[in-house]
Length: 117
Length: 117
Length: 117
Image (cartoon, rainbow over all chains, first blue to last red; front, top):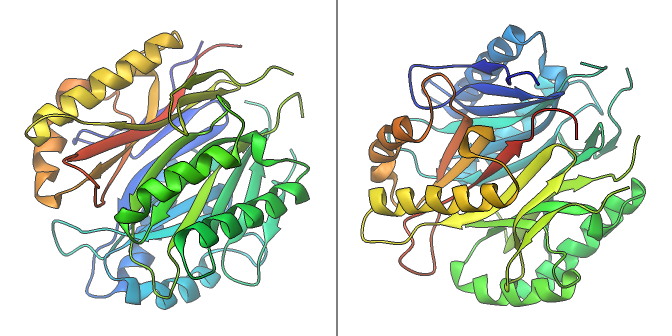
């Protein structure tokens, strides 16, 4: 009976919690002046979280994206081709949300640790 | 150490990714002139994805529904009674989102493959 | 090959479905006049669902929160410090949605049953 591994924050949520072979990501948000910049930073931020757990972006099996502006969808879709290997894309959902600040995008998701734990 | 099974698309996401006994669905969207039509098509589309993995709608343990119009909620709730056996409903969440086109609903979710893999 | 355990409702969804060691929560909604009251009631409601499965709030590994009003975010963030032990927070995502009634917040999530099943 092992306690789930967590990437804690000073705020009231974890960036990631591992349960069995599955890692649940909390929100990772963008920073910057436009969607492309914010999305790149979001994925760099996710990489950092996954690395702390010995995982990489390729281990993501599901990602959920929240956009402030639905008109940013085509930019986001194109950008994803650079983020993952061809035919190795995670399952994805994209929806819109309001933000309290200048955030344009946030991403959460699920990663899977291959092999026995 | 087996690579997760994926239902790929020509776009930058997978329709489904299997990880262990769990299948993560990406967005499945509706087409048609009203919510009921679009929701029926969405579930036909999900059936098709699940069938490729040897699963059925009954294997869904969680579904998330995004509506364009919150006023479509009662229609959606009623429709679900036809989609699943009584007392065998998946856990469900429903929220609203904007869409870039004439989509009125999209659904993603999680299916579970019973038995050892 | 065991059928997933479910907490059924008279409506067309389950409050929770267990699959392997993972419990998927459906939406749990708030009731009351303000966000803090509704959020407290939502977590009491989640506790009740988890208790029926022999689990507690501490077993939550991921929670997703939907707010009607993004301005309620800081209240929600503060409230979470009371809901979980320090450094034992679940991964979290928060977005906004419309509601069809006077609901201000709903929560779903994932719990993990530690130990072999």
